[in-house]
Structures are given as C-alpha cells and as structure tokens.
Length: 573
Image (cartoon, one colour):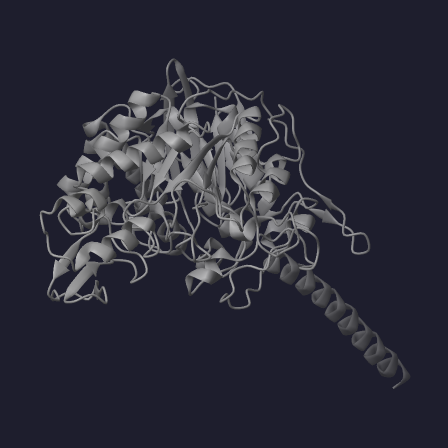
C-alpha cells in the first residue's frame, strides 16, 4: 500500500510536469501565431529589444533626374503645424521635408521620396480647398506666397519634384468669375456702348460663358438654381463648386496664365483633378483638354510633369493616354476593390500571384499602344479612399506587403501620407484625412487637429515616434521599399517580361529591363515559406540585390535556390 501511495504520487507529479511543459509549449506556439512577424526575432521581455537578421544588401543610390519619381501625397491641413493653430501649413511641411527626403546619400532618417504631390493650396472656404476662390494666391491658413517660394527652393535642394493640384473642372461659387457672371446673367444683351464698355450683360461679360448656365431647370440633379430668374448652373461635385466650360477659349487663356504663374515659381508640374468630369465622361473631349494642357506645359518646359485623375475602370482611363499626357492614375490596382487587395485577400484563379504579374504586363502592353513615353501612375490609397490597413483587418504583414507590391510597380508610384505608418481612416472624407501621426501625444508641438467634422480616428499601429525605433515597423518597411526604387532604376523604368516557368499560384516572377540592365523580381504572395529555383544558366544574375520581408525573416540564395519567407519580395541581379 505504501508503495502504491508513492507510485500514485510519482504519477501525479509526472502528469503535473508534463502538463506544465505542454502549457509552456502551447504558450510559445500561441505567441508565434499571434505574432508571425516575430519568428526570427529575439526579444527580451524586460527591455523589449528586437534583433532582426542583418540586412546585407544596401546599395549605392542610382537616382536618375527625369520624370520617373516616387511621390508622397501631402494634405497640408493635417500634416504638420508650425504656428500652433492646429492647422498644418507650408512652413510645417518645410520643417518636415527631411522626413520625406533629406537629400543625403546614406540617410537613415529619410523616407527617400523624390516627388511631392501637394493637395490644393489656393484660397478656399473649405478645409479641403478644392473650391478655389483665387488661382493666384495661397490660402492664409497655409501661409504666404513667400512661404511657398521657400518650399519650392527647399524641395529643389533635395532633388524633390513638387507638383500641385490644379483644379479646373470647377471653381468656388465665390470666385470672382462666377460672382461677376451672376451680376450679368439676368441682363438681356443690349448692344449699347456703355454695356460693352462695362460688361454688364450676358453678351459682353466673358465670364458668363466660363460656366455652364442654362435657362430653365434641366432634368438633372447636378444643376442648381442661381437665385436669378430661371437660370441654373452645373455643379457635378457640389452646389458650392460650379463647373467650368473648358471649351471657352478665353477661359483657356486664363488657365494658361495660371499654369505659367505657378510654373514660374519653379514647381515641376500639376496633378489634374477630376479630369473624367471635364465634359461629363466624354473621353474624346476630355482627352482634347488634356492634350491642350500637356502641350502648353511641355512647350514651356519639356521636363514638366502632369498626372490626371480619371476615376474609372482600366479600359476607360487607359484611353486618356491618347492625349499624350505623361500619366493617368492607375485605379485598377488601388483601393479595396483593386488588384493588390484582391491578390492578398481572396483566393481563386483571378487573384493568384501569377495573375498579379500578368495584370502588370497587361498594363504595360496597353499603355505602349498609345506611346512609349507614357508613365504609369500606380497608387494604393489617396485622400478619397479608406486607409489601407483596414482592408486587411489591421494585419501588419499584409499591410506591409500591399505597400511593397505598390512600390515595386513600374512608373511613378504615389503614396498617401501616413500609409507608411499604417494609419487608420474610413467613412466620410474627413476621416481619411486625419492628422499625421507624428506623436502619441496629440498635444505635442506640430500635431494638427484635423478637419473639424472628422470622427475620432483610432490608429492600430504606433506613431512615427515609436515606429522609427522598431526595425519591423511598417515605417521601416516602407523606407526600405523606397530605397530599393532609388537603388534600382529598372523597377520604375524597366520593360516587364514574365518568367513563366517559375511563376505559380503563390509566386509572381518577372524581369525588368532598362537599357542594358536586367533585374529579376520574385514575389511570394502567400503565408508560407517558398523555395524557388532560378537557374543561373538561364537568367544572368549573380546575387540578391535587395529584398522586402513583411515578417522580418531573411531572403537567402543558395546557388540558384531562393528561399522566400511568407509575403516577401526579392530582387536578383
């Protein structure tokens, strides 16, 4: 009995020990499952020190001074406040230019963007400033013309091409052109000399024909009563933003003067707002407008750049390249409905890694039909879309991979401010334009208050202040991705070919050739490690040129076998 008593005690003790070991094993497994990005990391529980594999492939920058750029979209209102009024401004952007690009070869504190798209900066009654009241000035909330001149100079010092929003589909209803037109609208043409001199009637006031006025209410919801007689005006976006009549030659001369005015400041070109609506989805007429705008700025300086917003499907927006404009935003790969999100979030024949590569080649093929000088303009989000992190339920791995897929595309890639931090924002427009998340403490100098009607926006990832210190942060992932573009001009400019025998459902394999240089790019768009054979006797490469790894693991090359961690991209050369 005594023996059995001790035996029972021993058995209980063994079960207890086994149970503890199982518990410990389960806890470690749970930690790995909760943080798949932490697999190769050694982390001290007390110090929170993170060690990642050494990155051995930092190359010398090879930035070409042409119209191929990597652009950072800035909404001044929410970016950085220099004077304590809670509103971002030009001087705030100047203070933070080194964050975007400090112009140094071996900078560890700069993202490396060499282009900035500045959302509207002209006087306006709204926070977004797409209702322009004066095309020749800076909104007082943002600063002065002298401030803007300093911004241009500082951008030029850093090799940053600055383009600004040019809003010519409409003006504010408080613009002097519209106010003047209303005064003459209800005065019948009189033919009197005094009328011709003072321009008081519809016939002699040129501004009447700058807008789309009609007498009698049209059967359309985007026409609004002027408050004068039975006259109505078109306002596709808002009652406060009457549409311009871009067929008018006098208006076109004014617009040319406006463009020249800003180009003389030294900016690099324009982003053209709402080009789809210049003539209500009339592709032929809209292309004619873009052709005129493009010819004007190119005759002024052939290095000036234009990109148009044509928010529609690929089949339609690609036709706008018939205008010979440099770029049209590529909506086919953007947002929750675009190719990048579908490839990462959904299964099926149309959403494989192979299909993603084929889609990039299809874009190249269609654009080449219009001109060899076209520059695709891929983006993933902008000020009109929900923030990217929400598309992936705030999964940091997929959020990073989406940014990498965007930044490795050909052409001029555009990144919306704060995407490099995984900022949140969805719903109404104000929420998508929340304050740049510089600090956890929203009361710190420089933090903006954001648009007045913005809902409370909670960010799932850390502020810049925190992420800059974390080698596995979204911020540091973006920084390396932009660096890869700056090291390898083939990424933006190269002609794409498909490596058919290597690609499959999870692996996208393409080459990009620019002049006499070729790189090979492999994407593992899956949650599993993949080993891919890239025969050196078939592909002329020597080594890894650089890589992006969403979970921090190293991409390795052993002879001709490439080991790709989950959600990673490697460049071979």
